[in-house]
Length: 185
Image (tube, rainbow, N blue to C red; front, top):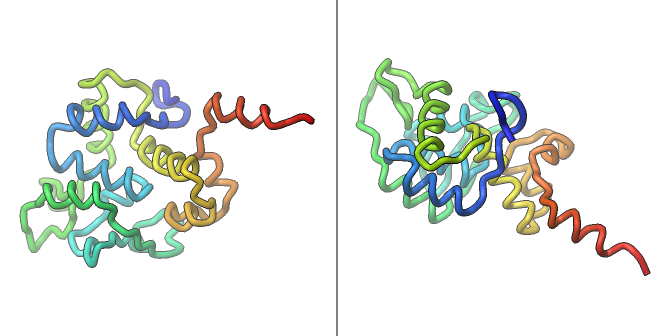
């Protein structure tokens, strides 16, 4: 868990996610931003770099130029819950600012502003240890716990190697207990 900016962002429980999206985030923009992070497993910087034209044909495109390492473009299918958030959020049309999450300065919303939004939302519902990376860790851990092969998760997350991906995955005390329970004769 993240404490005073140190450590990994918390993997959120289903209850914490529900509370964040119902009572924590007060603007449609904020719910949509963090829903993209959750339902695609992307980094906050990748979500903030999205342009309106990156969402089409039932997919979100994370352009190579905006991904960590700038190695390849990722296309992620839009699941139904995310589709709902995207339909509720309509950024003001501005031919001079193509960003899905525009700022008043004519650019995209900044990482520090996204962090500020998240901290305020967590304060509203009383959850600690959450960072913008929590949504990525939560998504990847949920996929892993559902039995999705690591190679598939790697394609979605954009990780170059499985070792790095595995550091994101949380192992619960119950999973450890279950693992050792199968040992023996």
